[in-house]
Image (cartoon, rainbow, N blue to C red):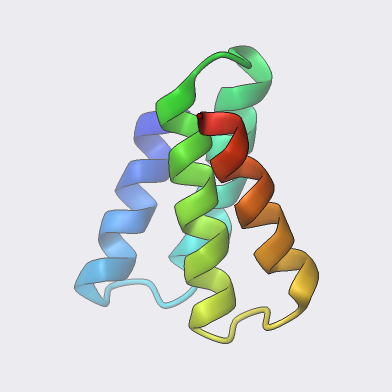
Length: 75
C-alpha cells in the first residue's frame, strides 16, 4: 500500500492526476494500519495531507492537523 501511495504522489508531481494525493492518503492510511511502526509510511501520509492542504483541495485546518499528527508519529 505504501508503494501504491508513492505512485499516486509521483503522478501528482508530474501533473497526471490533480487529486492524486487524496488517493495516496487512502493507501498510506492502509499501510500504517497494517504496520503502525512503518515510519516512512507515516511521513508520506503527513506529506500527502500537507500537499492536499497547500494545493487547496481541502483547505480545512483539520487536514493540516492530520499532517502534523502523522509527521509526529513518523518520528
